[in-house]
Length: 413
Image (cartoon, rainbow, N blue to C red):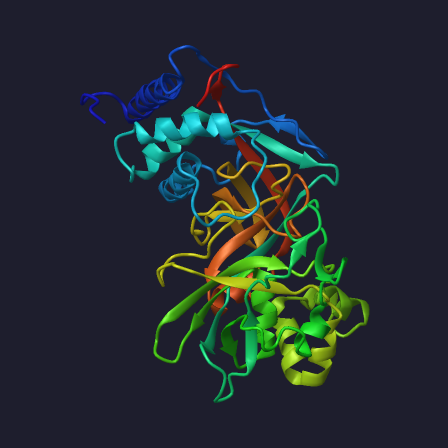
């Protein structure tokens, strides 16, 4: 980093920290409008939790993480903050948006989009302060999600007879609920608005013949898991990949079928995972059909212009990064905020407790992601990612990185 020889290693590191801290903080302050100065940003007030200050040295595994990978994911969120993407989901709170914009300006002024791991770590330490988010329950709670990959066709036949529906034109959202997959959805019958068709009615053909089919699958279980995850890669017979993403739902309440299987003693709580749900459904197709119908919620999809290698599209409007993107409660957190996750997770197998210490970025949300220290960790695409994601229901620690600076009142980022 341009430091002269003869300085001890510890001194070089300390000097690098001081130099980078000064440069990044000045860059952030310099991105504020000329008529105002940047000010120190206090920690946000987050309902249902208290925030406790921490030092980066207090974060278990912080120094060993790959901060360059986190920096790349953070820059993707910066692009979305700067220019709202065409494909976006429900918005998040704006609490940290100004501070994140200044941090993004500092990132841009580093002069490289791919800094070393050390420089990336020093960037985060210079531009953010860590705050433990401690919910009323005392611990954070993490689950996992992924993007399914399934076989499909653009026309029915040859065993492809399970329709994937696009959003119906007569779907009328009747209000904004506390999460993106809540609130009512109606349809007009004469002069009256009535609840939209539930899963059973749709599976029985309520939407058939209206030209809403955007793909056809072989297995209704695949469709069910696509709807839980909110996205999918449909691999067509000619080798092309159709990218599908969430485009609304029928307004009916979401009922977790895993919870039903546990309550009935059909799957032990300690064995519950998406793989166990799939195994149950595969073993008894009729029981599976009836179980699915106990969840009246039904998700509609739209096709996206995404490359085959891009991650699933998050609500912020950027493709997600496996192991670096997470979904948060959008009513409490701002998209683009870095969050350090500390948990012991069954990554290698169902009975393992592998250390997961990772700086991730809030880029998505979900109907079950409710609470100040609740997050869904994105693990990527396909069966292997699904196996890992499906067995994560674990506690840990959730640390929000709050930008050090924000635009002064009356200013703009």
